[in-house]
Image (cartoon, rainbow, N blue to C red; front, side, top):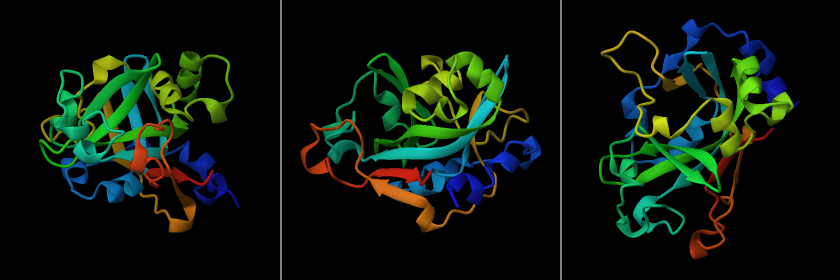
Length: 216
């Protein structure tokens, strides 16, 4: 049985939006980066744009440990206009470009501890037709199975830099982007931990198992 069958993905595609529980800010401000990575798997990343809702189940993430991590944009606490969001309190987005692709990172931990999580893939659940319009003629399984693919599929641009993904208690409406819980419980056997991708320069960090993926 594969992960699609184990999680009953086809049934999740008909999920009522009323079942979405947008995560609280406290989920992201915790100090245990690896735990947050694991717990992000199976959560829903959702964008709410004028053309409609689109989103999916987070299936792949990578952890970045900030000042001590050679692969982090904030290595040695280097602080620039570009990476300033990493130094904010957790629960906001750090958006940047890499080789022409838009990359979506969620900031974690407390202010001035520049840790974050790169979201590398989602399993499409909501607004699949809209995602196909944005991505062109590709198979559903390939719509958002990469960091640049998912941002294009969800209509995410630099505009979303510093946007909150947690529940705004002052607003009764769904925000422009959020991460929500739909009650999925993952077993350890469903999660694979491997080294991060594309960081050959990161020396002792190169082979650390900081990439978390659903075993699809």
